Image (cartoon, rainbow, N blue to C red; front, side, top):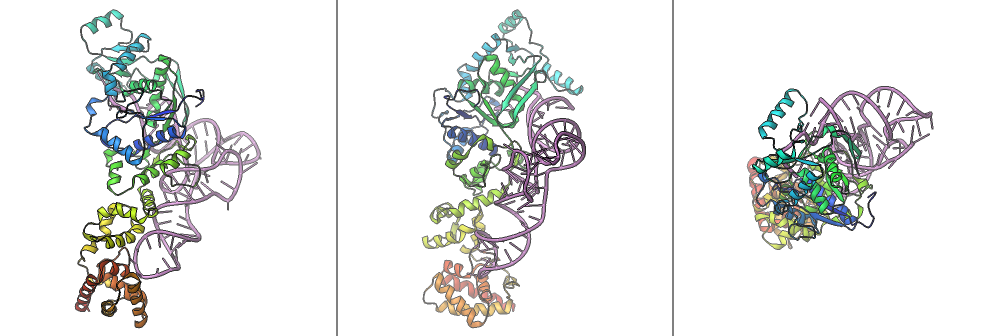
Length: 492
RNA sequence: GGCCCCAUGGUCAAGUGGUUAAGACACCGCCCUUUCACGGCGGUAACGGGGGUUCGAGUCCCCCUGGGGUCACCA
């Protein structure tokens, strides 16, 4: 905030393009911009950058609203709620003539000019540059066109674009809060297009006009804009406007060499939700991709993030999205919540496994410490509704010291004991099993393991013999044990 | 290719001239134990390379290498 009036209210903005899905990196950018604004008691605004008419996607704006809302990021000004600097949708701003007006002003100031070059001519230029292996740069053909000619071609209705007149010499510098001072030679810039032939502004123009008009004090965006920022600086200077503080953010990668992107089938926020990741866990995890509080803490509510956030904690290097760690963190969030809350989230995944409230609760208690993503639940409890067809070899377990004959014997004894049990509950079943093992002179596992297999037909289950018997109930438990005895008897 | 940027374990990430180079995930082992998981304890594992500066460099400078970004009537 150097050089800025301390009384100036901090204003940040999240300006997504409505593409139809929420990219993880974009969400993180929104988060940081939100955190920074809140941290400094400022305003966070939402602006829709829909200047590319060809990329318009139906319902995309809703996806943006929904995502922000589900993670709890509230905007103070935006398309839906308005604000003092509206409209907040660029296509509406274009319709209001805002960009055209400023572009004309810039032409007057000598910072821009009309260009009547055809796409064909530009294409030829591009080809030539490619052939000569030099970077393509507009040759400035229309830059010094006589005013009369411009007027005449305009009157003739010739299509045109408006280009930025980049100074031919000199350097442009700016300070970025995370990357430091950046300087480039103006000669490397090229006269970029500000207003397209369809009258819409390009990002290169609109972002500057809107950020200025909306009084944005801190520009936060992905580092892919780092190299075009000098053009923006030149624009601010040409208008005589104050340059906002720039804060560029490192990208989130899929691997060391690939960026995370929907095009490669990488998960979007919506995809992660569908897989059973919790909004808060996702937000918490991505917050840590590129930012750290400077301490060992890593669990933060949105409010806590607001409290801790600072640009000193931002890193410059790309971060690789590690789903393993997200899984772990999501599991932590699940384990830390009250059982009732977990059940509310998990129940939709229970299917036919738990129709009664009490079985539902028992199942939830078994699942909570074992679930990392909600969508994994069905696969963990499929045996509850229906005993799968399993192979007797499952009863043979080295670690449990069980073989077919012993399993059969244990099952027969367990069947008898369980059938006689006065009360059917966790404690009584547990006691009966332990007593039985002692009576038979066997290890607990030599009795319990076969029972668990008979009850579930699976190698691994959430909970053991006692928990499953309690969950399934006496009748179903005995039925399954009988089935197991049959299988074993036939195999021994 | 020009320009801009980045560089500590497999991953995230502390460290801002003097540390046994944190911590977390993952991985491995042990314990707990009726399977699995949870939990507890322990372990493997890093300063990309080369030159400087300095009494002393992960920390500062240069070069190299590697990687990313950008050079669009996309953002």
